[in-house]
Image (tube, rainbow, N blue to C red; front, side, top):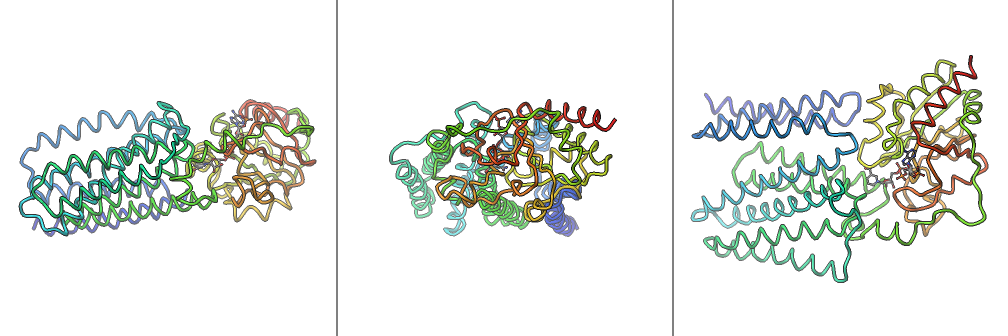
Length: 462
Ligand code: NAP
């Protein structure tokens, strides 16, 4: 009876995990997706308790209490801008758990384990330990505990490859000699060192993509453990986790026009900030306008598209953007929001902030859909975005941004550009848009500028 119930609960969990991913792919259904994930996890935990006889319940209860006491305040208090590092931490714990369960399984079953299972177990431990070290490094970089710049040294790729080959060599030797238990700590150390070195050479701003890749590694190692433990739920959940992490990393790297190899081994960030950053090109001037000038242009517009970016997140200006949109809509203006897939510093960054400000979902337009509309739009208001609007991505083959799809804000009749200076964005590249004749630069903190703009628009309308 309890076997049958376990099977049913496993099937229910698998269905809920798949639905969770499906629902989370749409902003409108994402909360339901989250709920499906939570219920799926509760059902999976219940099934696991039924399937395995738990002898020391107090250990289990103690672990759940400690996890809840530590995890709940973190989950409730974490700032939106700190979600990438929080995600890195949860990958670190998940992959460490998988690696430790793998090691425990080896020490319990070493005498009887077959070579194929031992090979999978070793692969799972190498992936788990390297993901743990890589995720801890990603956390430290994003949290500012260590410098976010990529640490590059000569022969880095050779050293990294040698360490990985060393870990793989220890694994193969262990498969050939299953009772040589002292090889496990050596293999674990080399895997930890590999994860540490790999992420050490990657710039802090590439960490969200790296985290998606590490997420995929953690999922793969969980799936491998599922094969060894003969646990179908772990295989399915690990595969879903691994493939969704990989798809997300692919989407992000495509949207940045970067290859995985360039992200993992390119040391991007060092180059951009040191060599290609060009603060202001000599002789050219930008047209700086006041909030009141911008309000006059907005007041006479019929259609407006907001293009938010990282600066909106820094300024926490999403509520002020919504307030301005409301004031303009009250005057009959058509308002849309253009969402670039890598605007900000994490996937869905702009969607989350705008949803928090109660912006209706149907006003959020993805890049492919909104780009053809700019040519017939009166005003594009760029709020703290930079790289994702830079025409150099289309016109300058030597630019690090070249080939990255951008929001075509330059095609709008007027561009109101809100930022604090003419400084570059993440890629360290000057934005040609600042100098176009139809661009009005309004300098200042986005929240302050937008709040003043709302007042100015209301005053004009009074
Ligand atoms: P961006 O190119 O980094 O530019 C952000 C701009 O915001 C800066 O130029 C800055 O200019 C301005 N800013 C900062 N604080 C501000 C404030 N308080 N008020 C007003 N403006 C402020 O941002 P983006 O256009 O959103 O592009 C995102 C970049 O990050 C892309 O290059 C993308 O490839 C990269 N990236 C994204 C992800 C992701 O998952 N979304 C992951 C990794 C990398 P001032 O200092 O002059 O104000």
